Length: 313
Image 1 (tube, rainbow, N blue to C red):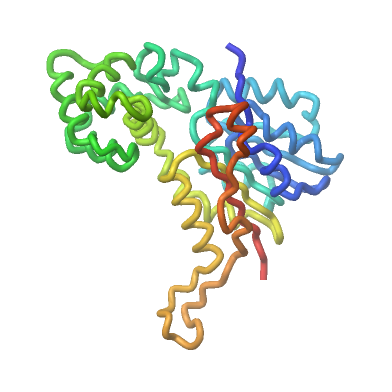
Image 2: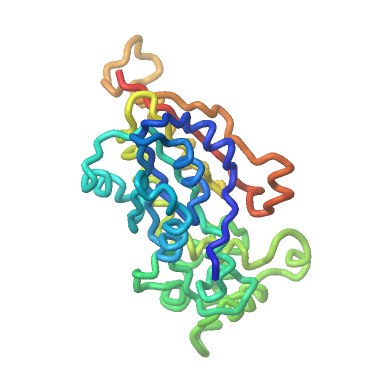
């Protein structure tokens, strides 16, 4: 299957990266290379782009798509949380811009056997990096009822989390839950009929929660933002596109703390903690897709772009 993925907030992201022809840029979630293609197009002979992704299919697709820029593009299979290691191995100290387009790609959702979606029947997989041994099947069948409740409540923000966890544990007592459709039926049974008839698909939030838990998406993001800001040169920018409130909250908080890291009590006349600002938040409110983009690409609807600019004092 061809790696098709519509790049969300493409023009807005490229505009806010302030691309310099001789700059060094990192796309930490390379995907099909849509954003990277537009970055590479704007680079001169001395410019450089590092593309990072943990998904083998993404690496193959992006390598093909960016072939015409092979003299200025380096593609690495890794997780963006290891960006320090990747840049150190390439002998790069500071970069002019970093991009993250978070969440699951259209390709991953549309490839049935990856098990990311409740819309087609497949084995419960959901691994973004298929070198990982643990799959969604282990979470569904091995986690305790409380652990399942916790992740569905916290990562899925589902008010029926307790009942869904209870139904999963009851169902797996007779046989392991092995496919997306088996899990979907269990979730449906846990949600009242009148609630199922309105709003989104009843399994959407639980699938999201399991995927986030399996791939450690929120911990990776939380632990990476400060590190990435530290790798930016003066006036370098980091652009992060999120797709749900949990990711957006982390990005908003980390950006704000880097802009104003002072921990002194508000009644102190001067700062004594010594924590210095690393720059400023460019987007006081997140940038969201236009009505036209949402119409063209329904999956862009929940996306938000936040931008931070480094200031080295």
